[in-house]
Image (cartoon, rainbow, N blue to C red):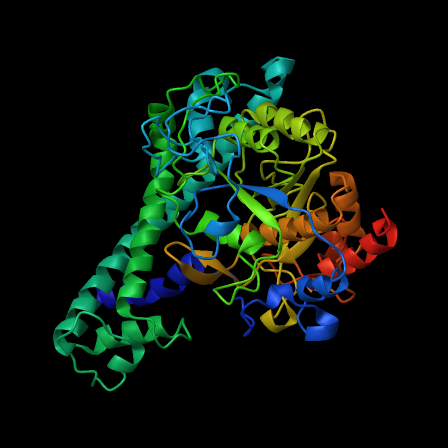
Length: 537
């Protein structure tokens, strides 16, 4: 009887911790992000209507680099739009173009060995920063730190704060989830034994009579199933979620107590703090690719109008792929070198759907952003999915340099939804005046690994939507600079007149409080203005 009380009392706590993300109702129409509100009824990008405006103009091919986790280079809807290095002879094992990277045919992978092995798992930056600089900074005040190390000290203090917060969550929640898990396992065994099957749904247990020996177990699982409207959810779904939550809590403990393993360094063998030690990695973009980078690439450039899969946004594009984001957090040096690689090889737009809360070697990335700016390259970055104000809780890379000035070739993108999703601003999206504009990031259908297609949510999807719209403009108006592209996108867009729900809460605010433009990106309006301003050039 005591076990029953423990289990039932913890159900609400468990769901508050694991499933308390704001519910997003998905629009019914896949590809809604390509449509326009006035003509189609969806607050998308108006790409379909934008192409109608451009029917009498010729496009030029634009190279868009995607820095991400990897890509399915054989995908049916992507392989024909992959960038191919014109100065490299495929498969000859030589560095034909002399850039230091052998057989970099479709891009480069900074997360692997020269022999082709790829890094599949990595640590988190807060863990790396805390343990690496602990002996130098722990217990010190800002007044004791020399000027040249103050930024690094601030990064250490933020990492320390975040790790301690996670550790407190472990101490508070782990004993209870252990008891809860034990009760769930017992009740699960009773029911599966009674039903003579290992998996069951809510419908499976409704007819079961609550006998003395089985009554409490049925009550537990009926309460669990009340927390979902999906009739297909099974007992194993819940058990897997519980185990994931337990493992995450244990990881919180481990991050503070244990010095992280340098998985990346063991592979790349570079001098990490030396940006000039830049020749490492391999050309293997496929292994450990997963869905993320493939999905991002498809949003931008999946072949349009081929009656296969999905339509990307840019119709005359080549996707250059650079792998710098393994499982876990990316490294600043890899990001910086990826930006430089993209610029040196002709990319005009770079998509960055990744991020982290601390950036110890931010100067490397800042210098790379400035390098891109000097060569007319636009960077597009997802704002992050924590439902936080990134003016107060930084999310890196950041458009603000260490000296406080702001990059002029940098767009930070929040995620928007549609009226059909219940909120025009995605409930998970980061926000703030460092966010330039919102773009569709809910239920975005795109390419996935092994010729797949799925719809995902995230600012990781909103960023390539924005990068795609910028690429469309660049393709038809190739003379446009990053500053002109940004100006077009921020001056146009869907104007949200009504108040919206602030991410992570229930307060209604003006969208101007959530991003500096107060708009949702729109290709149709941007093309109309571009034709007016630059149509005769």
